[in-house]
Each structure stands twice: as C-alpha cells, then as structure tokens.
Image (cartoon, rainbow, N blue to C red; front, side, top):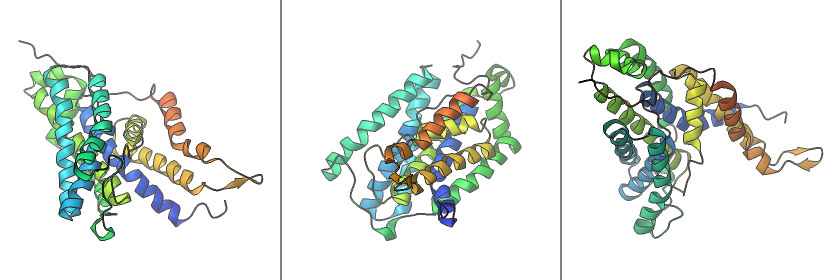
Length: 294
C-alpha cells in the first residue's frame, strides 16, 4: 500500500482518463446544443472497431484514427437525423444506437476476420499510445475557447438554452444542433480509437465496458463545462487506476476479491449521479425538440 501512489499511478490515471475526456467533450457539444447524447458508448464502440480494422488492413494507425472519426460521425448522424429531423425521443434513439453497436461490430468482425470475439492483433509499432492523450488534453482548452470566445460557441450555448430566442436572432437551430451532434461523434470516435489502437492492440467485443456512460456522468459532474469535465474524468480515471493497482492486494491476511475492486469506478459513477445530478443545471432546452414557428 505504501508504494501505491507513484508516477506509474499518475500515468495510468492520465491514460485511463483520456477516452473519457474525449467522449465527454463530444457529449458536451451535443448537449450544449440541446440534444441528449447517451449514445456515447455506441459511438466509442464504432470508433474502436473501425480504427482496429482499418489499421490492420492498411497497417497505418493514422488512417485508422481518421476512419474512426468518420465512423463516429456516421453513427452520430443517425442520432442527429432521428432526433432533430424527425423529433424522435433522444433517450430512446441513443439507447437504440448503443444496443446496435454492441452487436454490429462482432457481426462485421465475423465476416471480415472469421472471429466475433476480436479483431486480429496489431503490431506494436503500428499503435499510437500517446497521440490521442495529447489531443484529448489540448481539446479541453480548445473547447473552452470555442465555447466562450467564438461566435459558434455563443450560438451553441444560445440554442441549448433558448432555441426560440436564438431562432428569432437569425441563428439556424437545426444547423447548430447537427454540428453539435456530429462533433460529438467525431470526438467519441477518437476516444474509441484510443482504446483499440492506443491502450490495446485490437478490438474486443464490448471493449468500452461502460466508459461512454461514465463519460456522461463526468459531463454532468462537470456541469457541462470543459475544464470541470476534464477534472471529473481524471477523478474517474484515478479510481480506475487505483482499482488496477489494488488487484492482488491483501487485507488482514486475505486477498481482496477482484470483483469488489473492479466495481470501484462504477460505484463512484452511481454516487456522483445520485449526489450531484440534482445540483447540476443542465442547458434549459436539453432534450426538447425544436419546432420552428411559422
């Protein structure tokens, strides 16, 4: 226990927080525009599978990363069209995408690689273990600048708070919401790519393991603000890193069961949602389809 807190724990925290930061920032753009995006889990799975598959075939992780972004945008566009164009229930649509992406990658993997469990192993020299980390932390401050210092950020926040007033001011609510949701797909796709060609060297079935939902919890905990959301993701990453470090630790002469250790990040998620969701004020128009007045 004395050696628990070390530089290895810090690096592990940063690496484990990276996909959460990317997915949470994506969720921030979508939800600041007024569209609930619980499909972050599915978007990350799309990015993870696409990145691993393209990297395997082309032996180029940058092509895999770009393909993951495209996959995230493509799946996010389904959510955007359903929720913005057809006014579908945003929670139901997001849930449907999550369910779809649990089954679709293994199905395609079976067709391409004759294995529904995982894609082929990628050589170590074809991985990008640190580039997405740099991208994630840079994007926190880029997002802060875009959100609070640019006309697009002002319009995004206006549409999420009062779409009627934004429309009256000449802002296209539809275009801004589409942009927010598609940006969420791109960033969640990068987060998924990091899991398969950064942290790991292949895609495995359901490899996100609830990270999309944890990212959503971090977004709520961070009150839909970029820097606070990053800090919340680092907290979740830290608990995940602690859980890994504690595996095999003995207490009172008995080894602590791994099952109890592995639930730490998810238990923290439940505590955060139960304790802070009531004190975090969401964008006023979040989840409300907008019908333009004629």
